[in-house]
Image (cartoon, rainbow, N blue to C red):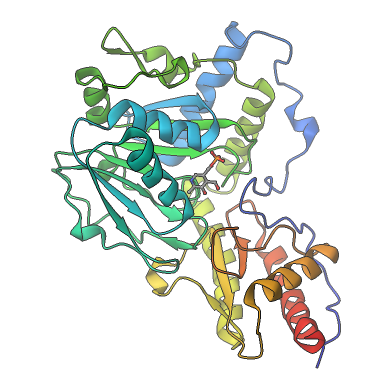
Amino acid sequence: MATTAPATRPANPRFSSGPCAKPPTHTLDALADAPLGRSHRAAEGKSKLKQAIEDTREILGVPADYKIGIVPASDTGAYEMAMWSLLGERHAEMVAWESFGAGWVTDVAKQLKIEHTVHTADYGQIVDMAALNYDHDVCFTWNGTTSGVRMPNGDAIPADRAGLTLCDATSSAFAMDLPWDKLDVTTFSWQKVLGGEAAHGMLILSPRAVARLESYTPVWPLPKIFRLTKGGKLIEGIFVGETINTPSMLAVEDYLFSLNWARSVGGLQGLIGRAEANARAVWDFCDQHDWIDNLAVDPVTRSTTSVCLKFTDGRITDGAAFAKAVAKRLADENVALDIGAYRDAPPGLRIWCGGTVETADIQAMLPWLAHAFETEIAAG
Ligand SMILES: Cc1ncc(COP(=O)(O)O)c(C=O)c1O
């Protein structure tokens, strides 16, 4: 039987997994200091870009001897730049448990065509990271945004590995602890956990990744947009804010705003706590209802940002149509926008729980999810 509609609505119905909700205090007026119509190579622009790098280092706790660069084309740009610049020197271990990791496998298998081994797990599962050969280069995604499965920690990665680890941390940076000593390349985009703008990516390199860049030249050509070295030396300017090509200074200002907000909620630990509280509210809801469950099979691998859910009610005959109808009801009511599962993932819902989302909004939205479920079953 259909229930009555809940009395309260979330103040912010934005639960998209990217671009993600802006910080709760965000306004366009707060970006008034952006040096618009000015060269990004003028002193003011350069100092904003440098600030973005320094604030990123401070909040994420990136070691002083790691390089941080702002690069074009978002996370995809950052990760592919790293793969194209570093891989090929040795065998690659390609690890995927959902769509984005699978995309990096395709890059290596079909584009770079280097020697590699593929390790995959189905949606909801994770690859056994202890079974990999870390004398090879290892490419993996820390948090599978489309499956809601994440690495619980980096314990399986040996400190004394001979290969490099390339970590796509798009939906984990600023929400989960990343063990920098285990990561040689880390990438993410602004549009994710801090709710920044699209199109800009971050590339973080360990000293060993820099050493590889300076000692190895791939056999394939590299477009200018991917080039991190010149004459066999790292282009140091990229890592102090002299970007390869023109960035959006409005997006930079917006990222600086988000970083400041992150500081105001307690920095990385504050952000981790906010994501955990949000995810916990959704997990509790799943525990209280026997018709919905986490896609992640092992609770220790459950994502605290991209929480992916599946409907488990036996009365549902067409899972994809049902999930779509529930997501549409919630969007039509303006209580939850963009929460349908990713197009390549199993049918269900995906609720973004990163730190820019308020727990009160998750709590106000969940009774609407129950209402939409009951209404759709009754309509069925
Ligand atoms: C794990 C992961 N990798 C890569 C991407 C692609 O990011 P972008 O569109 O910022 O390049 C995403 C986007 O959702 C992602 O979640």
